[in-house]
Image (cartoon, rainbow, N blue to C red; front, side, top):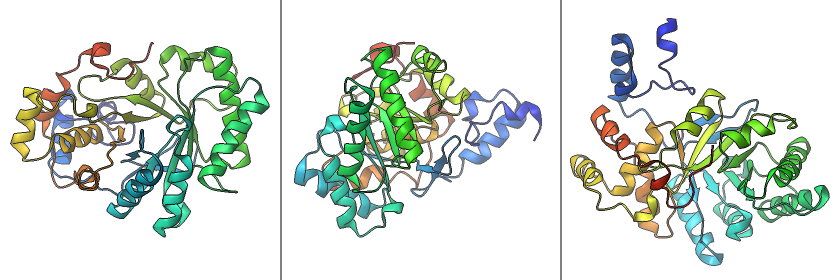
Length: 315
């Protein structure tokens, strides 16, 4: 491959959209690639230094509890999702595990993520909090990805939690480990003591109004897979005129446009819904393509940290 084209490839080997290409060859390659809706619900991304692959579309379960969570996960799995994103804070790890068992799918067919919110006060207590989560999801088994939910506890807490995740990884109780809401400074600080670095995933709030370009670029440079939470902006931008223009052009829903946008950015979107029709609709994003003009319009909506509805990282 010519050197001048290499820089125009996404780290996971998809050409960047046409508007980001700087050579005629790059623009031609990108146009050819993006004219065809080559993405599919079965697509995965490789995780650094791991044989584990992460499905490119995930299903979020924030504020989904008890029987509703089980029902929603079963709908998602029946639709074809193979990636569920939970957390200790969501209080539904057991329900996610139960849904997978009820689905009839093999455990190996479903990628399950959870997160630790805060350190336990000692290395052993923190490890036990993590191991308990694994047991809730898959008794005697594993989770596919375990994240630190937030760096807000400070440096000592981050170190304690990361060392617990490294222990889980060594024991096979986690197939991969990563972070969420971590900025450049947090990741750089980890270099001094982490045995596993870089983290394999960084989960961030990402959508057209909050693109977090500095940390996204950093993660891409270090082959850290980027997950996008709140990709639908919780419906708060449904009347944005630019979004409406793209929605009307393609005859799709707001959610479908935003999920597709995240996929084409190279992120792993995690749309959330407890409405069966919307769960199915949010995965029906593979029969169309956002062209260069669409992507440029949506990219132009970025408001920096002011566009965050949950959290923009501190770099």
